Length: 284
Ligand SMILES: [Zn+2]
Image: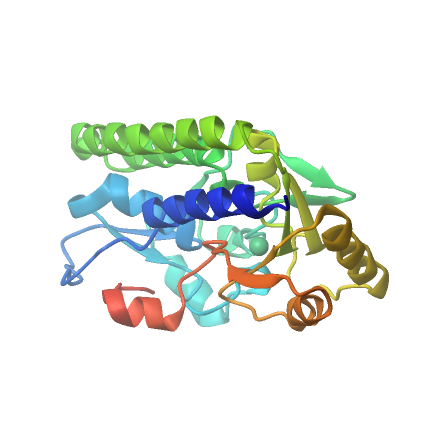
């Protein structure tokens, strides 16, 4: 018996997460100048804020679609545009540290850090920012976003409250499904490219083995390649996960070497340009 059954369960469950924290269907929504604009630093915050703010606000992402968000930096024109905003939601934990540049240039904007209250995972001198991939942490993010919107637009307080309660139920249900299913998993180890699933692993008792740390631009060391190959062989692991915004060569090398099947696991860090085209989502 390999990691087969367990990994299939994990895939199914992560697909559910992708669907829920997935593509917000904006359909034919058009930009209405009467609606206040809220900026979210990147996609997961955009998604949660859109679900709470719904018809009362227009949410835009600061990082454009199709871009891997870890190393993005704002251009001068981005900074200039942000200074006109009323409210900016950002993650913190080092994910969007460029926000400081905008803060110093935008004294009239209110900034909200949506990772507030989360116990961070620190590796060496780096804090792992991938909280949105654990429903347990996404619940805290949703609470912070809800409070930020209520403070920013007190007239729509009750409207946000209703949407927030619905979102909370969805995330709580998901949290329970993860807890119940993953606690029964016989095989706890899964292999990914960059360490995006640390919080998920911590919150649901899994063991993530990543080729590189929390920044996917990093190079995989030959020693780490060997370790992963040996791990696959010793634990008889059948799958390795790759992600949509990068196409890492080392994953293909490992698959060739060991015969594991490559599967996609969305880190929900951003949409691809195709996602945006399909759903007609309005971005910055
Ligand atoms: Zn990442």
